[in-house]
Length: 127
Image (cartoon, rainbow, N blue to C red; front, side, top):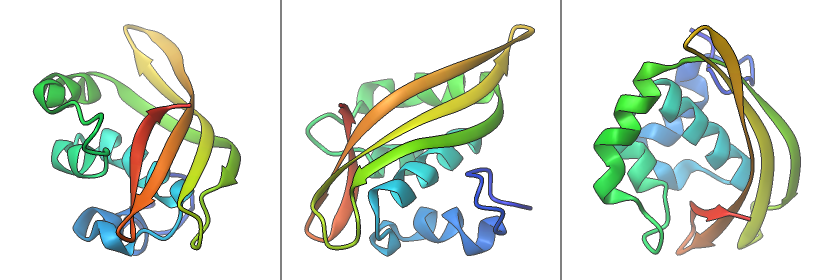
């Protein structure tokens, strides 16, 4: 199957690599794409692992998984990436994540902060 993140690569050559080994993620955008795919697959363990400890919603994990399964994911659209490259330690990614629920298309529009600590990119929260 093609990876849900929109790269047109097979899942096994794209976000599955991150899902199996978060240290393989080299950019903030790659982490954001792998998190979108984790929502599509309702992979709560990866969503928690890739979320920075300072803002990780551990108590909401089950409700996040339930919600992710309750919608039909349509596509991811990356609008802008600022910094977040391999040698950076901070970056932002602005995106739209489209999904279908209750007979309507909806969109999550977000500008997300990412931070790299000890060589690992993690989602920090809204920018």
